[in-house]
Image 1 (cartoon, rainbow, N blue to C red):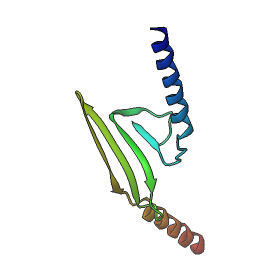
Image 2 (cartoon, rainbow, N blue to C red; image 1 turned 180 degrees about the vertical axis):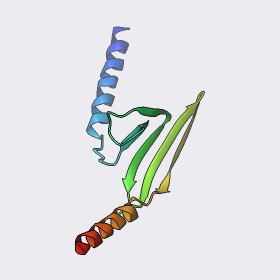
Image 3 (cartoon, rainbow, N blue to C red; image 1 turned 135 degrees about the vertical axis):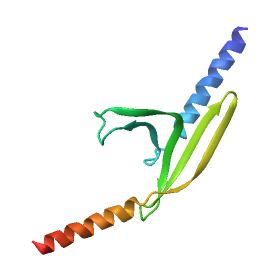
Length: 106
């Protein structure tokens, strides 16, 4: 019995070491769990998202975002990964163009 316990503990230690060794430091793996009333973490929380939503990657033009959505219903786990079109790159480009026009107009 003692050998079995030692074997299980040894296996758990090895598994933990391997998982830490292969962990990827991904800057785009951002967890989205809370919606705020205004920008900033000190503002009122509007909604806590009950599902797992993560941003995994961003396209070069900043308009497409790779997103993973995961939720559980009972013992079933549903996981979807895909690209969402959110035109942040276009909005930033438009704002910069307006700033340059305003600077030239002055």
